[in-house]
Image (cartoon, rainbow, N blue to C red; front, side):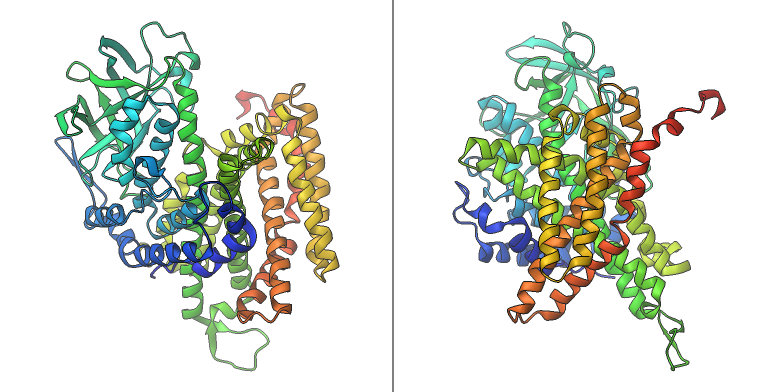
Length: 594
């Protein structure tokens, strides 16, 4: 089944919910408007649908080949990437001073959804390049920026992040890679890194690795980690490529999914030491890498939502085509398309409503990112940065947790055929599974949310967002949409009680709060997703009253919001019960009893 970019829905979210016009009023974005966004979306859709999506199954079946340290990508990938970069898609959101187009994050995220839905394995390469670009832009010297950023902005060179080692997964205090100064501002890097996405490939001539390593005088723990640029090929003073650096891919991981994305074991210094260049100050590398990490976490949230969209489209197509059993309540004795059956409808609506809620919340976070970066008022910048910080773990964690459910429903709708690889439904399930692990597991996102993003600021941003939810709920009740408003109000009671618990108990009972941290993240995802669908319902109702021609689309918005209110928002009460009262049972069982 071919992918079709949901341009109409994306346009609705950009213009009606995320505030594209307000983003276009920010300094530096004056040329951004709905007409420009439409042109970008239409061109992105063509590339996603016609070039990138057809390679999804090819890449899954073919994978990558490693021979003598050289990784050959799946057929068609190199050509598709050249077209992708030559058409300026990597440079869309990078600053103009480095040859980029300087578009807002909001518009770039809309195109990133299309790349991820079309072919998530392909999309990981430019995603990581943008994250590496941002880390260097914020923290590297002017000399390093001038050397690397223009080529990365154009897509001529790609970027990676090298954190994980065999003994150091999420616990980066255990990083052992070494960096020894050799003079002239250079260092020799040695060590091994694992799980390096697109660490080696044949699509570009140079790869810029960002590597965490320790200097000889580094203190123990995370405070002793520095960040280094380690290129695959050294760069001469005139910008041309020099000799091959002492870095190589020694193995490719055999994975459950995303087979077309090479996940590499990278070895540094096998021949005496890879040349690296310090980014910023010594021993501050972890903080610098978190600039890239936040970018990547939002990107992975987009991945989760986008794969869910692809799985949903395939499930809808199959449900309309597959004929099985007669329709209940119908006088027609002939078998009907399974989309006529109530349980299939329930599953499809469960998929659809969550995807639309996630898209709206994700794009809202993108607009907040733009406001935090460009708003002329310092207090507003600070407010929106707090919103970004709060939403990142929710967008990443909720989107990626739910994509596992949504792609599983896609397989279920296919019945036995969903378990057969030829239909393609299973690939979405396999590809999606990594997203809840990438860039910090859901548990890590949840602890970030309850600790640094809620308790540390006494719940200020959480309560401000919940106040926005309350205002929309009140408005819904005055506009003939009381069932949605009432469901939001009921969920708000539990959301506020859970927030109070996190704030009040984090210092005194950190394990108790941690035990309910993932339920808290899911609760916030559902409540804030319901808020966005409530906003969408208000817009749709007003447009219908105004005689908008696209009545079928708008009626679907109302129905989807009602479904979410009836089926998803009630889950909040159970999650809240687990948060408030479930810690004892999480922690009670002795270790030897497991």
